[in-house]
Length: 337
Image (tube, rainbow, N blue to C red; front, top):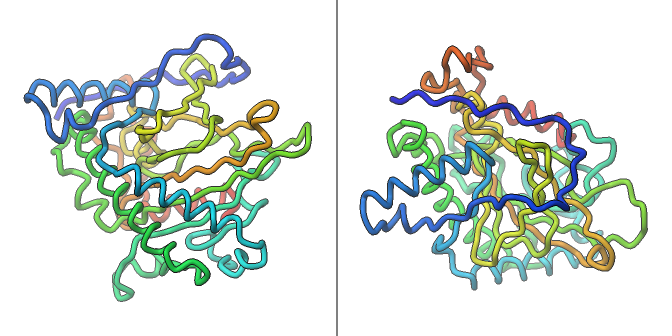
C-alpha cells in the first residue's frame, strides 16, 4: 500500500473575491474508468481524479449514464412539492427527528458557527431497508407525500442512480489511495445515505443577512450534486479565493466530505463551499438543488488509514469513531438535532 501525503492546509482568510480569473475545477469523463479505451487510460483517469480531489476536494463527472429525462422528471416533481401550501408540507415534518426523513422547513438548518439560518427548505429521502435490519434504529423509514404518489418512485429512482454512480467514484478513489478497488463496497452497501431536494426561495428584500447556504463542509464520504438550477455554488481554493462552480447540464459535481477527509488524515480534503445569493434580478429567481450525501454503514469505524500517516502528516485523529457517532455529533453542530 503506497503512502500518501496531505496537501498543505488551506488559507483561512476568505475575504478575497471570486471576481478575478479563477482556475477551473476539473471535469472528467467517467467512461474512461468504467469502459476505458485501454488500461493506461483507466489509470490516467484514476490519477486525474485523485489529483483533482487532493487539490480541490471537488470534481465534475460527465457521461455518468443517468438519463437526463430521469433528472428532469425528478426536478419537476420536487418543484411541484415545494409549491404546495406551507400547511401541507409541514404535515411531513418529523418533530424531533433531526431532519433525517421527510420535510424540513425554512429557518432550521444553520451552517456550523453561522449567526443566521440558511435560506432553504428541503426533503430527505433515505435508504429503504428491512425494518428488522440491525440498522433500523439509526435509519428510520422514509416519509412520502400522500398528495404526490409519484414522488416516491421518482425520488427513490434518482437515489439509486446516484448511489450507483457514487460507488464507481469510490472505486476509482480507492485505487488512488492505494486500497483494493472494492474497499468501500461492503462499507457502504447499507450506508445511511441521503438524497436532499432543496428549494432556495426568491430573495425579495435587499440587505438580507442570510445566505442560501453558509460556508460549510459536508459530513459524509462523498457528495454528488445533480442538476443545480442556477449559479451560486462557490468553492474555497487553497489561496482563500471563492471559485464559482456552475456545472454543465450533463455534469454531476462530486466532492469529498468530512468522513473521507478524516479517514485519509486530510490527504483528500473536505473543501469549504457555500451557495451565495446571486446579484440583481437573478436573486428574484428560486434555486433548486439535489445533492446526494453518500454515507458509510452506521457501524463503519472511521479510523485513519495507515497509508495516510507519515512523519510529515501524523495522525490527527488518534481515536476512531463510528460513522453514526460522527453523524450525530455533526448534526448537533448544525442544529438539526
